[in-house]
Image (cartoon, rainbow, N blue to C red; front, side, top):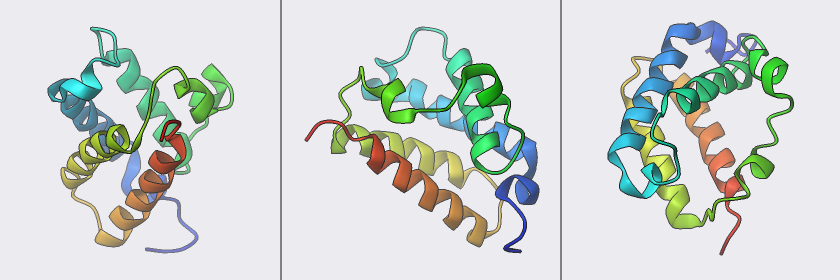
Length: 124
């Protein structure tokens, strides 16, 4: 992995789209996570896709449309404890496993997701 290239540049939009799609397929199968979402998962999948594009160095469409991500604030209405974090992380790890990407890039993405998921915990 070239340290001057972003994850977005290294894997491209299509891989990020695939990650978001598989992640929400996992959400649909997980009754603990599924109950947090409305019936139609497509808008949430699109928001995640745009967010990940931005986080991994791509266009800032997410912020242009929705403002600063403010993840903790946007998720404050849900009880997120270590168990909920684990459900979320498991879904994301399955999604990551579906991507054919360099292990170093996967590790960098996983590192981001672990930090973000731990940051979202708002209940002991």
